[in-house]
Length: 354
Image 1 (tube, rainbow, N blue to C red):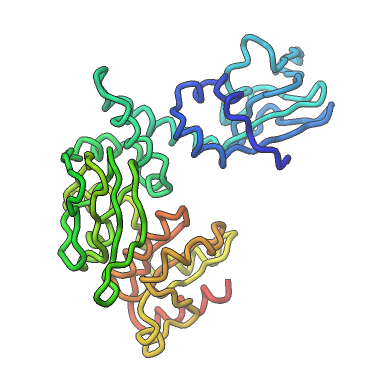
Image 2: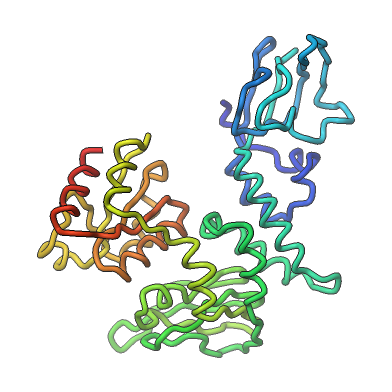
């Protein structure tokens, strides 16, 4: 496998990439693997099942069917606009005739991406402006939405309501109860938090950024104030719809028995994460768990190994928010439904050994 970055403009010559927006192409760049094959190398054989789709970028392949008929296939061929032998179980042998460059992508990720894209497209009318497409694209390109079943995407978008906002308008106030999830469709906003008698600026938000989910999941007060720094439009999703469509899709629960089975059968390590405060953790320590307090978790996720899976234990609401934050960052996360103390300790010890 080469370390060369995929040329997305070249990939746009192929279906289905020719219909993707720039934001989707940018998001998918990291999913593409660039393969370089010397002459005479078998890429796949007839009858082999593969979870990858391959696109011939340079060079030529010899494609052999069940009757042993060989067809030369060049990257410049007029018919080279689909993945090579685009079936889960291959119907031909594919061998490089000379040095070849191919792009590969996980077939399931590609299928999900196309389902999301077409679901969003179905929501657009001919008269919609570019911002209508942009905010949908931004949501669909986020790691968070990889957990939402494609069949629910349409239901999700139709529940959003648009609201015009003005420069200086406060969208959410620190300390208030939360009842809405927001996406910025047009405009910019600033995130601030109280620090003594002063206001600390935490971040600037632009079109496509979303906020407000923490308070909805944890049933806790808003942890920051969001103020518009320009006129704009925000898309609003009520708490009930957020929980029914988005939260329930993203937050996955696992029992202790299921955890035991997963740890024994999984190819990757399991990490137990306790999101309570350090003092709570020390008083009632979960054996084998790593303490990552909820208020530090968003900063810590960037240092966590993406190939592992994470099981969040501790307090119920905070565990759900912790799993949500991990999922939002593209990690595989579950909430542990704890039974008896002894069972929890046994599961934790087992996970520690993984």
